[in-house]
Image (tube, rainbow, N blue to C red):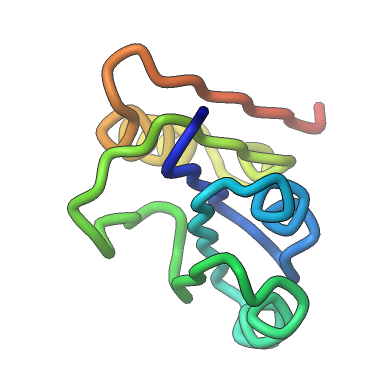
Length: 103
């Protein structure tokens, strides 16, 4: 089983709740104060951090999996590179990463 599980750009918790309801230990990161507050109510099983996905140094954990839904397109090339490097740094060896993006 994949634990812990990181969801950068978690929004109001829709994607975190999918995974936490399946029994996973989920951590979400969201920059919007409104979405962050909504997520804590919508998905009380997950832990949420408020901040930018460009700095996900809020803990020293390594994650078995990262699920990122439509966040990469929000950045220019240098921001994307920074974000991907942060994700790689937080991912365990042989961990899984799933990213979707708008083009």
